[in-house]
Image 1 (cartoon, one colour):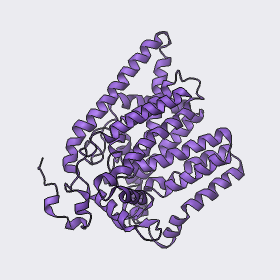
Image 2 (cartoon, rainbow, N blue to C red; image 1 turned 180 degrees about the horizontal axis):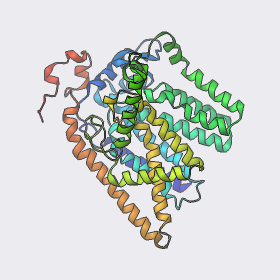
Image 3 (spheres, helix red, strand yellow; image 1 turned 30 degrees about the horizontal axis):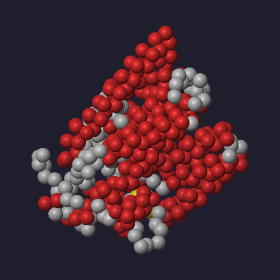
Image 4 (cartoon, one colour; image 1 turned 120 degrees about the vertical axis):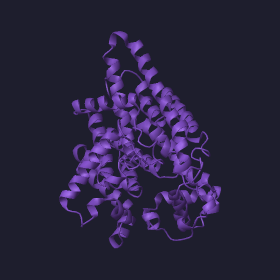
Amino acid sequence: MKKHWFSLALLLIVALFLVFFEAQKIPKNLTFDEIEFGQLALTLDKTSYTPYSPIAFGHSTLYFYVILFSFKIFGVSTFALRLPAYIFGILSVLMYYLVMNLIFKDEKKILSSLFFVLPSFLLITSHWYLNFARFAFEATFLLFLELTSIYFLLKFLKDRKEPSLFLCALFAGLSFHSYTAGRIFFLLPLGFLLFKAKRRNIFSYLVIFFITVSPLLLYFANNPDLRFEELFFISKPTLAFSTKLGMFWENIKKTALMFNFQGDMNGRHNFPGKPALNPILGVLFVWGFILALKNFSSFANKFMVSYFLLAFIPALLTIPKDNPSMLRTFTVLPSVFYFVSISVASLIQRAKKYKRLSVFMVLFFLIGSSLYEMRTYFIYQSRVFRNAFEIKCPLDKVIKFKIKEIPKKCRVQKNEF
């Protein structure tokens, strides 16, 4: 138990440092999306609860109520706008540790408690993760909701206690209220409950889930989901089936190559074109994924492969020009670092005669990998942010303007840096 709390405390310290280190400078400017997020949050003030807003091409509002709460406490500022992403960026790492603790402690092949903390350490030091934990997108919020639901699902499958099932369903429902990718997450717990739980448990899960999502479902019964109609090509009746099939295949190729070859080209999401994983993590990820498929009978492997594939679906169904997208595939990260970790465990097991040396060598390379990732974010990606984030005036100075009406003096000029 002492090791458990020590590991959590260590991860908390690392996460706090990496998320808040020069957070007001990297990124220093705002993006148009962030300004619209702040405007959306303010429209929710002093009105009855609304589950969806058409502002900024349409968003469910749960996350924006959190931003509004932050504004109420700290005032309308860039810090207050981004604070929820910071907080959930930290909490997601801690929740991921708890999930991995449940996953790994029953795995006989895991050699030491190192593997309880390794995936979370790799997560928080990943430039992919760190990027979205430091500005106002809701990616870390969604990930926290999903990981919390998974944690209580795993708890329920072990202890069969109803409170765990209730919380699993509740957080799956809250995920539905978050970023578009969260709309299908509930299928993951449901799928495993169908095979491992009693009918009354499945019924309880569905009842709690549908009660939680009912405000949004009632809204969609009378109004369109603007973001879905804008982004997902399957919703476009003018496209032929063969065209949609071709777009789907193109998305598969782009998204698969994102990890080790060409990453997201959007400067707010990534250093344009840089693979989502560095060479060390990329090789370990591929090998770990192969190992998980090879040993698919293991519950942990089955669960993480399912989570990985489910997290891919939103990107595969969006317009190909928007792919590869490290935002829409953000929730693959927990499974990615699970695969990396089982790959590391396999390497150490294969070198039993040189166990200490192999552990040392693996740690050496993984620490080097993490330093490389932080170098990517804090040195190279931070330079891209200077132009990728378009507004240099403080939030309180521009939030009253429509995007097209923001004064020219507040806009970053091309080649200004």
